[in-house]
Amino acid sequence: MTSITTHELLIEPDERGIAFSAKLLQTGQLLAFPTETVYGLGANALNAEAVLDIFRAKGRPLTDPLIVHVPDSSASYRLIDITPEEKIVYDTLANAFWPGPLTMIVKASQLIPPTVTANTGFVGIRCPNHPLANKLLLAAGVPVAAPSANRFGHVSPTRAYHVLDDLAEKGVRVLNGESALVSSDSSCEFGIESTVLKVDGNTNQLLIYRQGAVTEDELEDALTKSNIHWKIITVNRTVKMHGNGKDEENKSKAVTEATEVGEEAPGQAITHYSPDISCYILKSFAEKSDISSTDTLSFDSAYLAQRVILLDYGQEHVAYREKVFKYRDLSEEKNASEAARNLFDVLRWAESVEGAEVVLIADVKEISGQLLKKDISLGVADRLFRAASGTIVNVCIDR
Ligand code: TXA
Ligand code: MG
Image 1 (cartoon, helix red, strand yellow):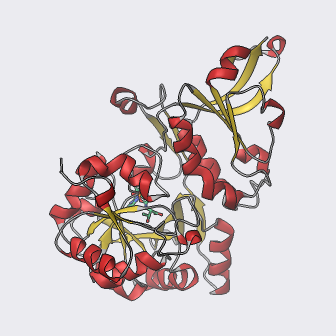
Image 2 (image 1 turned 90 degrees about the vertical axis):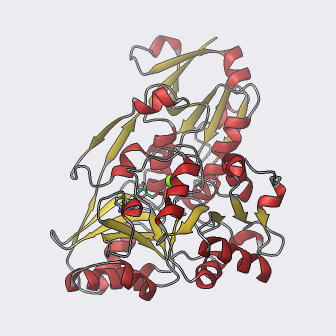
């Protein structure tokens, strides 16, 4: 524990603050910083002891590899060990999407400590597009390993106070992306994490491990423009949790299924975005007479009115607005980018509502009907599915 107060952990992003933040990283300390996706919990990626502190602070298992952040692609070359064919694809995607929300997994060079790669020998590289992150990376002059700055398994942070809520007790300092010194729309503008893919020269494939702000359509476009004929494969993983994932025992019971690729995406297999409250994806509200299946939850109307939060999308369930305890819409206009920006803040809000016990979340994938469009709604649906531990229900209201 530290005697520093929560407020004192915030660093103002003026020149002095950036220099101080860079110094923290250079001297092997932790620093949380904003990116265009979510806040990261950073440490010098070349300092194995500092990297270990990331795992300790988050309570993250050492089997889950970290992404390394660089100011530009040229700063990444000494960190990676790729074939000429892979380099063509790597550079093509770097040119198309960096700085920006894309993480590329490739073979790591000897410089990267095994803790960063979780002994896989592969490292995720990302060049963030956020003015403070960029200033920080340049000032620090070291590659920065950074997972999302939340306690392990919890909702990712898109505000400095989200980070403090989870990690102030560990004494983690935070470069404040919501400071009055910076424009208010500059922090975490995408709101969900980067797209993670592996550049695999053995099979000439891009393997998408995590859906994010860069969409499959955009990736395909970039390859086509450069006349690269690699296949893009989405690695589908579902995570089933028993209970709401609140306690350690439940977490250890997480059941995972993988398709297409075995144990190559260790983090994805256990990643979830669990608020500290029971969450379910809502298929539909049903009348009592309609229920037969086991995937139906029954609530009486008083419970609904006093304990149940409804997170809607595109006003799909607005008819129930007055019947539930609290109602919010991730995007009334059914705008997936807006939903992505709101997502983690709303999940954190939901878990903090006094008296609430259940969160019903609209089925973004179904409602958006954009399965074929492969836009950011896929990333949003993925995060919500995981927040709900993969549980999809009908809800029956007993009158
Ligand atoms: O947008 C983002 O990517 C944010 C910001 C801070 O950059 N970072 C982030 O990191 O989301 P994290 O650790 O919370 O999620 C990274 C995911 C994890 O599921 C991890 O397992 C996977 O990417 N990953 C990272 N390196 C990997 C590797 N070498 N092989 C397989 N999966 C990897
Ligand atoms: Mg994370």
